[in-house]
Amino acid sequence: MPASTDALQSPQPVVASSLPLTPPVPEQADLGELTLPTPSSNLRRLEALSQELWELRLVCLSDGDYHGQQLQHLRRRWAWLLVGCVAAIATATTALIWTGWRLQSAQVELTRYAITLETQQQRLEQLEQERLMQLEAELRSLQTELPESLPNQLATQKQEVADLQRDVQSLEANLANHRDAIAPSSMHCKIVLPQPSAVRG
Image (cartoon, rainbow, N blue to C red; front, side, top):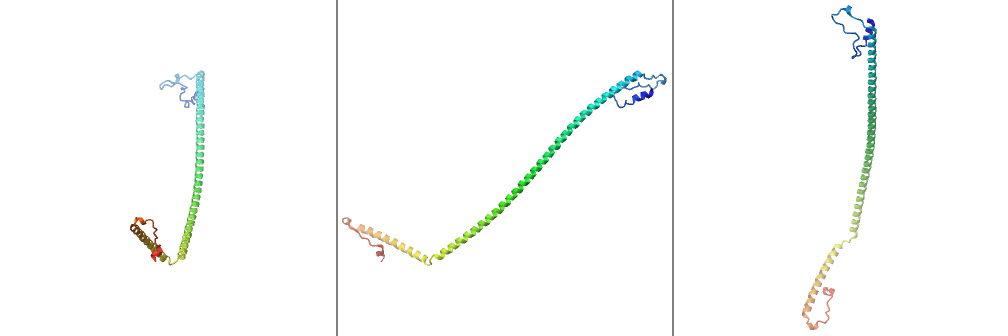
């Protein structure tokens, strides 16, 4: 019987809430007065231990299910987070590739515009030089076509115009004097004015 009692007491450290299988032994009690447990009490204690063990198994199973659900939830969250990170990295990579391609295209277009602008500027300078040379040639041709005596002729014509103006002024003065000298009775007579060429001669 003591061997069976030890076998029944062995799971006691695992179950903290289980009752002791044997009552506490007084320190000064006589060993001869101790009573051994009966089979019925051992059976009841065994049933109690079995019930507690079953409850512990149920608790362990429920805890295992709970932790399994939590672990599954964490795995799902980790999977969603991983998918989100991969999608974000893919999107960022695509955006960087597209931005790089656009920058390269813009650089190519800018280089093309710069080359076109330089070509147009060179063409404009060439046209300006050609036009300037053409104008210089036309000016030289006009200078060669003009007679050398043109300034003298212009001065002579200016002098003649000045003489004609003086003649006209003198004729107007003579006409005014004649009008004042002629009587009212002779207003109908015809006055013949000398020609400017005759006056000059």
